Length: 303
Image 1: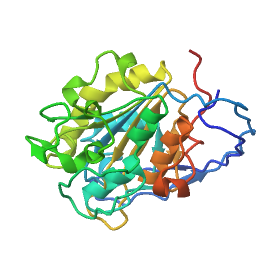
Image 2: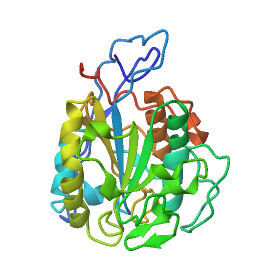
Image 3: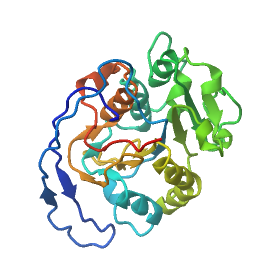
Image 4: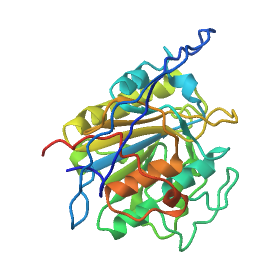
């Protein structure tokens, strides 16, 4: 069964991008390979679509795509990219950080155009609220969050500006957990989990190598498990390093993913739309203007 509904006719443009970061040399012109369209398929006529059993979205900070791709200081992320769907034309929607987190989680920047602490929003929908209302589950795991449901602005390396779920009053406190609560038994993860490292490990205050090491230590075991358990890992960045094009790394890895480099335009709203589409959820806000990223996937593995 596919992870999307309805009839699709897909022409995939795979951009093979060769980039060497920090070498001081010009990158060669990308080679674009356009395979023939896949045969159209029809999803189930009734019932909810079967999405991944688990999706983990890990968000890093303030690095351009070119600062990760081919960088010898990011060996793990580059290894992950070789066996994943890599969006080479993915962009954040704003500067600075906070509006991007809100966009990815709720389909809107919620009128926020800076990094600041503010009172929880009332009556505003979000991906977390959608999942819970649909009988599924959501948890956000923040490194250095001091307590379950903590609503303070900062604590150690934790910053609320990087925690979008804390800003929605209709989510229970049990959706706001320290990363220490991330389960060792991945089968007990919620339907969708967001993971946010602290201000050093997300590359905000520390170098690429620090975040890459953290990713290997904390995400690789799940990434390997996901391949055989109908689950996905999405790695993305909130924004780049301030360059106006705001190009960021976004990677889909796990079961049913077709590895390659994809040149189609994508942003936080399109990633949100894709997750919503997995579970038959209506698109929120600006995600409604986007189509889901269906061409990244093949048939999900049998259970």
